[in-house]
Image (tube, rainbow, N blue to C red):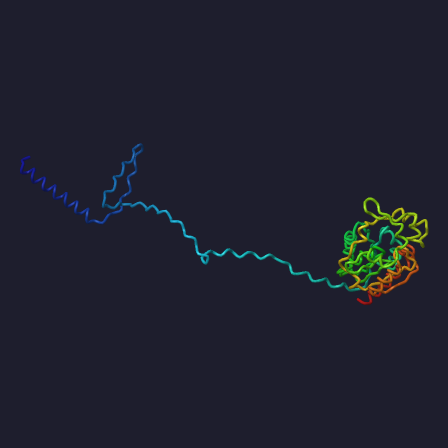
Length: 332
């Protein structure tokens, strides 16, 4: 080609190249087409680095700057803790109302040196009269233990109940009968009836020592026993001797500390009471019996009996309990 023609061809190429560059600069940037799939085994070509002052077609997301530690919130801005759930406190239990209706239940509580069988004659007579009768077996290990045994029996009674105590059993019913809604009344049989914070020993000191006291002995375990040879004369003089020999053999000792224990509740201050005063008693002075019966305002029933009246006068004792139950039933 001649030099003149070569010069013309070069000028035309330069014109086309400038026009294409100008068109690319003024045209809006288009979304780049997806890259063609690479043939297997062919590594992708490295992308060219962006030049300064130019904008990448798909800019990378900016890396978040590390957060500065938060300043502690002012007290007023501190989020309130969720309110604590209030403890559920049951409302106070109101005192149970006394039961109403006829008194058909009798609970018998024995004293020291005997067990529940000392009431056997009384039980038979009351059952003949149609009563539901229960005889407590006191362990005689402490006032608390005997009260617990009595309350277990009281809890089994269905309806108004008359609570009867002989000798030491009077201390037990004084405590156990208080605040007991099913106890309609009390019968004390030659029994100890203490006032608040008063013990058996406190009451026995109100008179000269009873003859039976000389025959009471304490063993190495701290339990009191009644001398078998004196059991008949001092404890059950009007009981046949053949029976007192059996009773003396089967006697149940009582913890010596029990006679010094005091009551914390007094049932006779809130319940009608009867008192069988044994005028021939050599274990609890009739003088002390009279003092206790008068102080409680009990209806006194004198009986010419030894201390073990539930055995020697079972029928008469059952009659007193029956009369008390009938009177209480009329009051319901």
